Amino acid sequence: MTLRSDLNLIQQWIQPNSQVLDLGCGQGELLEFLKYQKACQVYGLEIHPDSIVSCVEKGLSVIEHDLNNGLKHFKDGSVDTVVMTQALQAVRRPDLLLDDMLRVGKEAIITFPNFGYWRTRLYLVSKGAMPMSKTLPYNWYDTPNIHMCTFHDFENLCRDKQLTILDRTVVDSTHEESLSTRLWPNLLGEIAMYRVTR
Image (cartoon, rainbow, N blue to C red):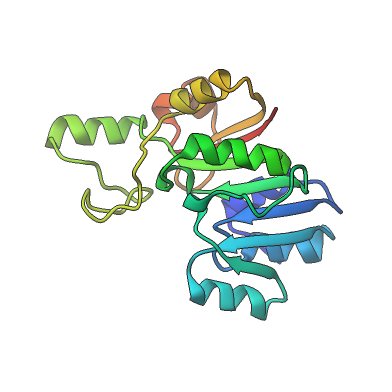
């Protein structure tokens, strides 16, 4: 089974035979891989009914849930890893959801678009309009992104919450890492990928 390149990077941070909760799991591609290739116990939360049906057809345990309502139905420490890809910037209170993720899981894996990327900055300066790109394909009025942040913003949040960053990968739109993205992540990285714990 071949995974999308960003999900392949994420699965490398997840131990075999572990328990994983995927927030906004979409069609369940990551969960399916973890269940059948790494023998993980997997659970997903998703808001779109068609995606939930697709997950159930794959034999995955997924329920309908709005992440803005938090994770109050999950017990403390009930899973090993909580994953949230490309959704941090779309929830009302990302700081509170991050707290909930690390209450429910021992570790959290979070990915989000970097609004400090140089093309995003240049677009805003040169056109005087909110940027649109392959990784940000929305108009300002129909975007799901309500909390734009950069790598620095997220790392400052982790520092304020006294969280430990276990791993960080900075990639381009094709999810490839390079020397330049490692040297200047906030300027040259398009997508942030973090693994954090308390």
